[in-house]
Amino acid sequence: MEGWGGMTGPETDEEAVERIKAKWAWIAGDDEDVGPSSADLYSRAERSGHLNRLVVRRYICRNRGCKLATVIRYRDRLLLRTQPYKLAPGKNAETSNEISRAISTIDGDRFWPGETFDVVELAVRDGRALIDVNCRHALHQLDPRDVLVDVESVGTGHPGAPRRI
Ligand SMILES: [Zn+2]
Image (cartoon, rainbow, N blue to C red; front, side, top):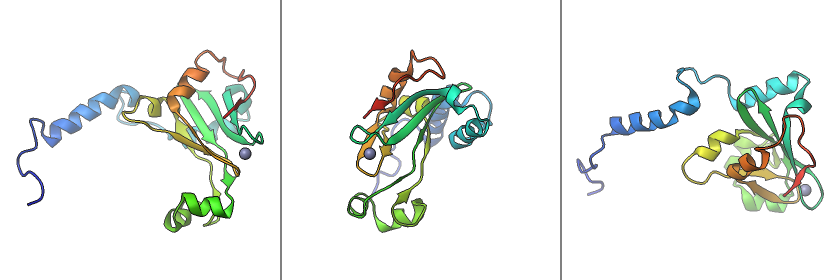
């Protein structure tokens, strides 16, 4: 027989849900409405025409200096936007399967879109959440905790030299 039947331990599912909700409440705020998504917020910042004033860090590829990602401080959020990139056919085939390519790429094959992440939300999550920041030459990953530390004392709009990763 699969499973343990009633032997699910002292916590019921309902209790578990309440516990998890309580844990996340301080991030989402008391309001039920969690507000606009990270991608929406980043797009708003872009459309405002003042993106440069919000930037706290840029990341570039160690080898060729390709743009990899931009981090902005916007309202009370720290948002990281990755650059769209095209992978060489070999590397593309090696690192993804056909279905995910069909679903996730811009061209159905090897042109991957940029993505937006809430750095704080990822950093405080249980377990290890790494952000893929890729260019055509290399697949890189950023740890959101490192990004938090990296930008902590950076003035908004004063990112300094891009970090090479
Ligand atoms: Zn590169």
